[in-house]
Image (cartoon, rainbow, N blue to C red; front, top):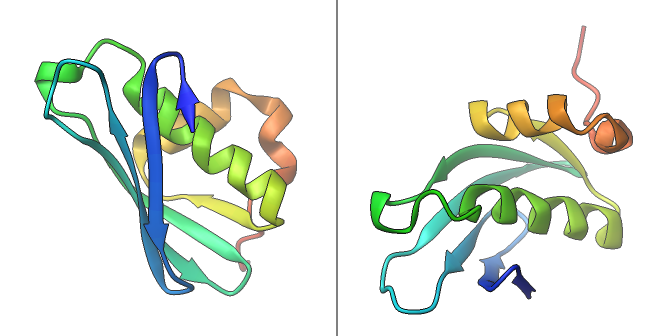
Length: 102
């Protein structure tokens, strides 16, 4: 998947996975990691190296996670502060938030 010139790949299984982002001209890799919990993915860490920062890499990683959630029918727990901030900026994603136990 390519989002705004950023190449996004995903690897993982039911238990855990990682989205990876690369940009032309750099070997640096941005990452968004997640762990599975039932029908939810807990987005627990987003890391973008400084050499590819400021290009929308982190946002593209979250966009890829959200697109997959819509396509595959899972929900998201935004445990990572960046993912949480993106969910607050995008109220249209509210239906993808995993229910948290009371």
